[in-house]
Image 1 (spheres, rainbow, N blue to C red):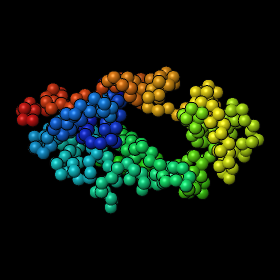
Image 2 (cartoon, rainbow, N blue to C red; image 1 turned 180 degrees about the vertical axis):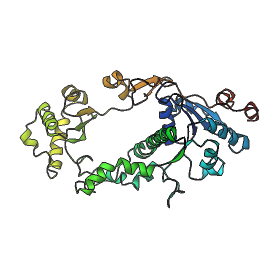
Image 3 (spheres, rainbow, N blue to C red; image 1 turned 135 degrees about the horizontal axis):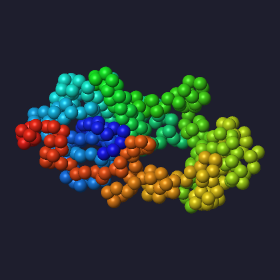
Length: 371
């Protein structure tokens, strides 16, 4: 692997969603990541399409057996970081908690990914992305006026407020460990991350510039100049012309009189102006609007689906998506000028007999044979 993290070694305890996303990002950036999964994992062949497991090997170990636990601890001795996404207390129960791991490697960064965090009244409760973003305030803010909140996939909790938060925490702790020689535990909770992602909105709310009513605010679809519109062919476009000069260009390129769409920033006018703008966009197809607006300062983009996005000329020019394993997937990001990430390797089948990989990490031959 190549990238700015080349030479770093990370252990990933296989779980769902956000922790594998963190493992993928670290591997994309050049770290050597070894994934530890349960015995007989991957027997259904779904691993071939598991983009979150790309760029690294997965080994199957039985952590109910002392040899399996000892193997992980031996790996810990060689690692810079370990990441896990189990419920609080699970790693301690199997003998792989922070105390045991840091005793083997005092410089280890122990990254922990949970929904509710390592402590608090909800820490032992089950949950998923939507539950975590619900108590952060983020879910309440997403949706149309006079309708229930909209489920924003699992991007806000699992990936933005979860896996990416864990990645930032692990990187920061590894940077500090390089100076101090001391590791630490990184407690990344999706409730914390979703709240952190909402920092700007909490600032607006404190200033009295954000309504708790959905669909009344500048960035939640309340404004006519910041919304999604239906075109003549039933497809959609996204308009985000906030600044006055960009708003003026949007109106000019749409052939509209500015006086008919003023005042721009008066929320009392937004519902009426939105109806007028909706009629405008319904008059042409999405492709026709792209011809008129795309690439201008009107702050415009077509709303593309999963099949269309990899084929868009801008995404192709930047290689935002790459073809690997016979299908498109997002390329590693961000971009590094001097230590670029390598093209992603396809997900690999979990290894029931991972002797070569464990040997490369320096595990004793007798322990490998025992496994």
